[in-house]
Image 1: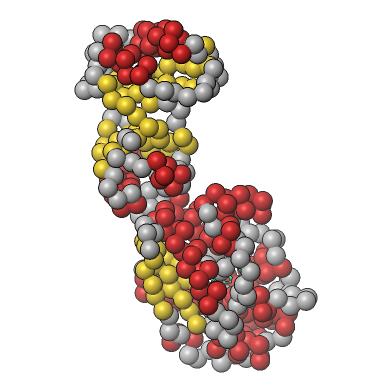
Image 2: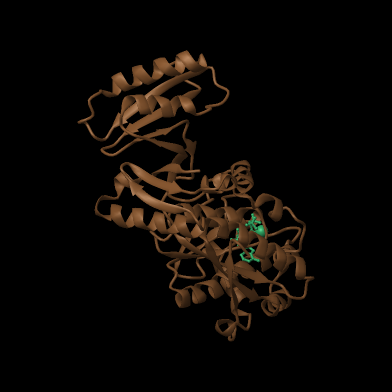
Length: 375
Ligand code: ATP
Ligand code: MG
């Protein structure tokens, strides 16, 4: 089928509009091989699109909405023929909405709406409802052709990936961090992922889980770089030297330090986490401050003000929830103390950390993988 798609937030882009559109076209052609994407007045034309990919298209950043589309010659009789030839489905009320980007067309928008509407009413028995119709049939008139399409399917909106620079997202096996990664993609950031792995645990399922989450995210970005950090050495050091109630905080500080260091190598401008204020003990303002203070680079937490139920809904929508729910031992779950520190003092945190031998931290080796959505 062919689709018409509209872009989100493009009116904000001024001189960058062209870049913005070109980026979205490139992204779509990479994500949907075999589909040709062309710029048309008011939006994009996607040719040769497969039905089974519609759900995924609805999550591609930058697309405001889309619908299957039919072309007709500009002659009003041909337009009516095309509109009535299509089976619109089970509706009882409708309206025709016409827009003319070429005002030279002999009929006004209202006249087009009336003529086409009368025919639809006659042939299908649908009733006109201008305020709240179940079906809106759009007739868009340009200088060369008429485009006809029904109800628009809402897309993810936001900006095309690649418009906002690169970020590095700390991906755990939980529900939150994949959603955080997706939300950054939706604001146009290219996201790379970093995962800290405790190798003394049975790690087979853990890495499978992390790869599976990465693959789901690659459905929207095309290719996602995943970096895995063997972390058991540092965990041992923490278990030996830090009191139980501070272990989680120190762990997260070390993760940020390693991630910040790696960020420079890949030229990422920010670290992204799945933190949500107050959700768990490590996410009080005091604790988040004590953790984020460990590195200078910009830290972004796109879920900070989201409720768990909203995060779960989004995880379900993007397809990560089921994978995140698989049971596994995260390297952090080992550290969940019965009485974790909820109001960490920075002085105390720093004092504990200074007792650790971190001289090799910068040399931590990192394994990198390129994950493609089709693998
Ligand atoms: P999530 O559901 O994403 O695991 P959470 O609510 O369980 O989040 P924490 O376990 O406190 O929260 O972790 C907070 C954030 O720290 C995570 O969202 C993630 O960004 C990062 N993080 C935690 N553990 C890891 C890990 N093993 N590897 C990479 N990042 C991690
Ligand atoms: Mg977690």
